[in-house]
Image 1 (cartoon, rainbow, N blue to C red):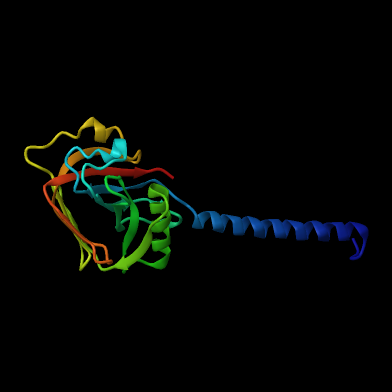
Image 2 (image 1 turned 90 degrees about the vertical axis):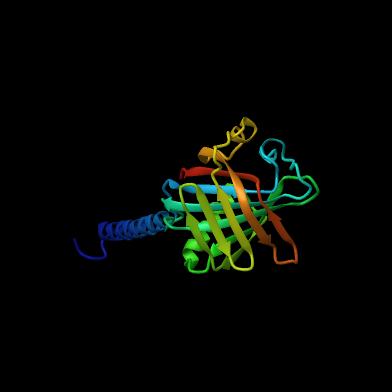
Length: 220
């Protein structure tokens, strides 16, 4: 079939469309791979100055004037937005906007050693779990997670130590039935010592108050 014939031109046009389609398919596959997510697993704990059981879960009202709530998430598996989450540790701090109100997220702390790609994935995950309204700060962070004790320290910002009490305390239904749906195997723990400096001059300290520890499973 000689070049320039009608059939040749049709084949050439069809070939170009096929090539463009294949290229678009490859680009789409690459984009999908970058957004790939699998079940993310790990552990979660929180502490606040509320007396046990913490009423914020059910009523959105604290039983103290100002509630500063510290959430610690340590992940041991899964992928989110294309980034492996194993070994990621981050802290979200929420504070009462008015007297007696349940706290709302204000600050997300991530480790300085994290890559920018994984920070973006952590931020996207935190946004999915907690919504918007917080800012991100990269910090030096040390963390120890033991069977009956968890401790996180951010120099000049946070000291967070929660423990499993002896004898164990029952997690009341007013907390258990209102926890985030991505938490399971939740236990009532105790805030042994929590100190937080917000950076604007405010400093919060509490001990012997509410803490909860649970396992994490976040589906894609």
